[in-house]
Image (cartoon, rainbow, N blue to C red; front, side, top):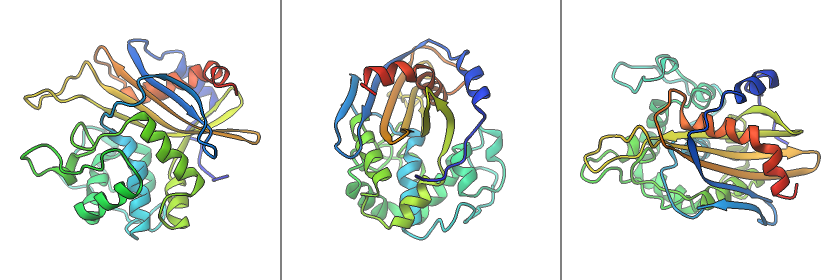
Length: 271
């Protein structure tokens, strides 16, 4: 079992779940036994590809550890520079790998993709069977290393997400053991749900219209991870899409919604 830091006390989680907005539709809920790959629960459209958004930080962390770019939870520490994405206040500071994952920092991801380069990113993603492995970015804009994973060319389905998650926690990706352990060690847990310890990564992004403006009322919200209870371990994916704009990101609300529903989800999964 990997030693991963709890993100917050259970009391905080329980209190926050009571305020989860209901105005989002669940696109897919998947629960899978990682060793046998038995699908314990599949509800909704789990085959259609959409943007991975910040869930891409999981494979990116594996790639960066394997390539020797990330060397520890605190190295490298990159300086913040004016002009970097900073719509989250916590991004306006020097950032290390732990802070990158905790704050879901976009510009740190961009520094990693720049160092990896297009060829290595594509090769890793293909070997990971990670969606369409397309890092070209927006057509004609040459921005693949900047934002291909955010409402752009890189697309992945919930079924592909869960296959990647299973391979990751079992150590079956074609990378070093240290890369797998390093990436998993950056993840945080929102706490316990019905006796299950949960770990995962959120992802949020707004769809792009034909004129490249954002549809702020239809945000995607991912929560991808795994849960453990006694000797059982399962991997899961929840994908939502909003029907109105919210102050809290769709990914955080997908996470909190799944945590609130976990008892029912576990029951429907036969757990």
